[in-house]
Amino acid sequence: MNFSSTFLLSKSIANCNKSRLLFLQSAKRFSTHSAIAKHKNGSAKPINVDILGTWDSRTELPLELESSINYGKPIPQILTSSVGTHSIQGRRSYNEDRFVVKELRPNLLYFSVFDGHGGSECADYCYRHMEDHLTFWLDRLSVSDIEHAIDAAFLEVNNSFARWWAYHGKATSNVPGTTATISLLHKNMDLYIGHVVGLAISLVYDCMFFLPYVLQSCFFLKGDSRAMLCRGGVARRLTTDHCPSLLAEKTRIEQSQGKIIVDDVGRAMVNGRLAMTRSIGDLELKPFGVTAVPDVRKVKIKHGRDAFLVLTTDGINCVMSDQEICDVVQRTEDPAEAAHCLTDAALHYSSEDNATAIVVPLGSWGNNTTSASIFYSFGRSMTDSSRFS
Image (cartoon, rainbow, N blue to C red; front, top):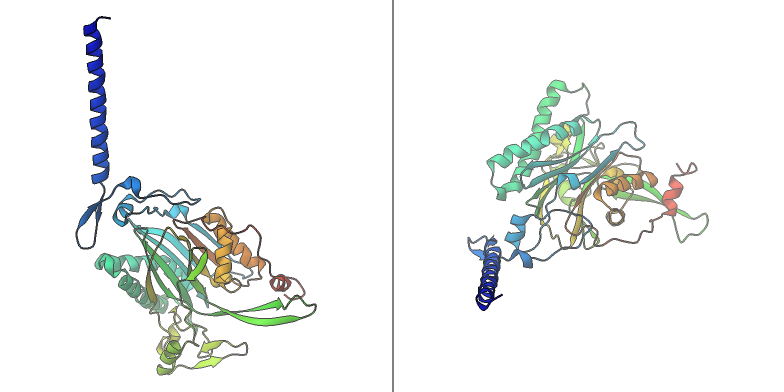
């Protein structure tokens, strides 16, 4: 090879290296400036997607790019297919629980549980029509008014059920009703909870200090349907039990000429019939202060700490505390298994009611996995035996 050929080859290699360097610089500049975070005041700040970081969890949720860029941290995309659900009839002869998991529109997920009483007609009606009323009001209000849309949807579904019952209802003095707990997850970050829930009482026998023949009977008051967030391994309840013993609820009932009557097992009942002060349906008690106006709140999801959202009915809540529910879910591998384990645990703990669970995985799913040991209650196991059943 002569000198001229060697010079041309060296020049060609240099040109290739220069072109490659220019391409890498261009690609880096494009990667950095193509991700723009938009702030509320209208300003925009470039974000390098490569420095957003990662989250450590057992789920393989895809990245929600738009939200991750806007918030400057990785935000997982929650899919309806990743949500675990399960509902069982339990020891009842019929199931009055209903639940829904659905994407109402892009970037808006809808989860709901309805626990019927006095018949399944009202829970069935909410199961079929609540999302229609939500969609109606969401179409007419801005994104910032989701809380108002939930409030209006609850009232409208109660009114429309009253009209439906007038034409299709049974000729009975007592109209069926239902508790309702719904959640709307907007852009995988903003969680809205609306609920009207009541109260149930469970009789549990437990052993004191494991002394032989010493039993104590206790009444545990639990809500009919609840929403709970697991944050940092600790249960955080998102709903309030609307019971007649609460001062604000009691005052409203009494100002509407209703009466709070305590029965033989210690339950405070509206007019001696209903152990809740808010519900959908129960039309004969609406003039006495029982309302369908929900409690509505907004919670900002922290995917770095929040592992999952759980919606449950009283078949689970009557026999398990919030933290026990949280611990059971943390021992499971996926949300579907978690929902099944919750209903199975309710049966093991002698739940007499229908049991329903919805488990929604969030960014920290699996980060706070607890010991694989199983919680065991001597008293609960005894109530499941023939001697105490």
